[in-house]
Amino acid sequence: MRTPLRCVLAMLVLAACGGDDDPSDPQPLPTCEVEWHPRCDHPIDRLLIPRLRVAGVPIVDAPADELCRRLYLDLVDRIPTPEERADCAAVDVVAVADRLLAGAEHDYLQRARWSELLGGDFTRTSTLDTVDLDRVVGAMAAGELPYADFAAAVAVHPGFYALHPGDDWASALVTVFFGRAARADEIAGLRGLTRIWQPRFYMEGGHWWNAYRAARDSGFTEPAAITSANEQAQNDARPEYGVNPCLCVAGEGVSPCTSDTFVRRIAVTGRCVAASDSFAAANVLRTVAYSPGQRDDCAGSGPRAECADREIDFVGGIAPIAPRAPIDAATAADLAGIGAAMASRNAFWDAAADRELRALLGWWQSTFKFPDSDLPDVRSVVAERLRAGDSPRAVRRLIVTSLLYRLPTGAPPVDDPDRLPPWATGPTKLLAAEGWLRAAAVAVGETSSPCDHRFVQRGGIDLTILDRRHFTYQPSSLDELMGDEGFSVRAAITLGGCNADDLRPTRSNIGLAFAQADLARLLCAYGTAVLPPGWDGDLANAVDHLGTRVLSRTVGGTERGELVAEMQACLAAHAGQPACADLETAVRWMCRRMLDSAEFATY
Image (cartoon, rainbow, N blue to C red):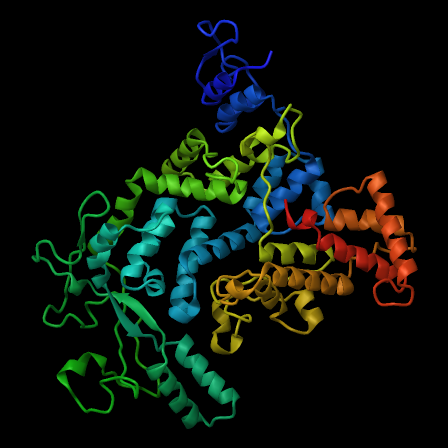
């Protein structure tokens, strides 16, 4: 007898419902308390298992190959190598997740994703501030910095404000940490706090020295290189932001440095060493050094009172910038109040939980067929873990070890699988640009340099204007094979990845598809592991090898024969032509077809 729809809906929200014949006689729900299951020890599975039982969905893990590929793509942004795939089949999924979460590749992936989320763009702030903001992200990603402390540090970081100056700071703060657009009253309420920042031009280290080195490399004499570097530092320097607590002075009452937006009043109180001069070096948390230049209203006009704070002395062509001054405990406490106020709101923790669930499940919160497909009780579990001090990395472990993540993606054996909500199967997602390229490189036996989201710009990374000491470049066989150290970055940008690609909105889906097909063709043509080791020309062995490397699974008997037949047909139709000129090119042709398939691009 089919359970009435009204009862199914009631049971799905863990409410009691009677049988078909006697709705007044409530039946016990198949909860973990009524019917125990080993997975009930998992806090998310405890909530999901009753739903699965009512829907008739088997409580089983996805096949090892499917789950292994999913874990690698989500946690390190690439497919597993054949050796890693074999290891996945031999150990428990929890052990695999623990190893990936603790690795450097996962740390990089989180830095990259957060760099995009924070709006990373090195052309809008200094190299050192970018690197320091990345350090804060890395500490959070590694589990060394609690999420609330991370948010507090980002909120008042000069690098974050420089990326979002003025009202954009309040807007970005709400978007990043509350997952929605800022309201007008929130922007107005936070507006006064922006006075704790003041713009300056950074002339130490990276900017001046890169301009100097570029001039010397171009053949400039020493004096000419110094002059050129000075001019660029004065006229073309990027603005940075240091904190000047004197701009918010004690005794102003409700000063412009006060906000009532986040639950309680936050007042940043000034602590001035030299009260008569708010711009005195002793007052600022980072030394101010403005420089007059030809493009500046204060340039070439002689001493003027309104330009006094813009005058600096060059010593040997380098502006004297003092080291970053320490923040005293009282000022730090005031600044930390912004983060503390954010963390006092439930929406802050809910947004953090949603972000992690959405990244790993894909469908979280809404789908086309199920616009209300989120699970509030699951969100609450994740949010409370974060609030209690669990790191985002620990929360990711909680999600990927749950049935929400571990179920098979295939349709379960129920009467009408199309009517099942998304939590009834494992997650299915489309590979992002960089993930596709990194996975494709692994498939053909190569590696690719990652897009460094701190410094990427359209067309790649321009190393001539950066201090190489401040970022990591990963030499790779793929880039070296192409004779271009920026090949991987440009390839990912062409596919629509990396946060500074301003061409993506103008590209059609067809254009992106052609770009992906071209990259697949290129990778398969040059990849060193496309052919089996010591290959004897047997096409069936080549299919087995490609299935393992490209699709991360074993190719079945019928499918194996079909793929061999396709290569044989290609050989017969294109004998002597580039497509399938011989056995090796036929295998590389099949490699391209697999890389460009929907199966490879989704998981």
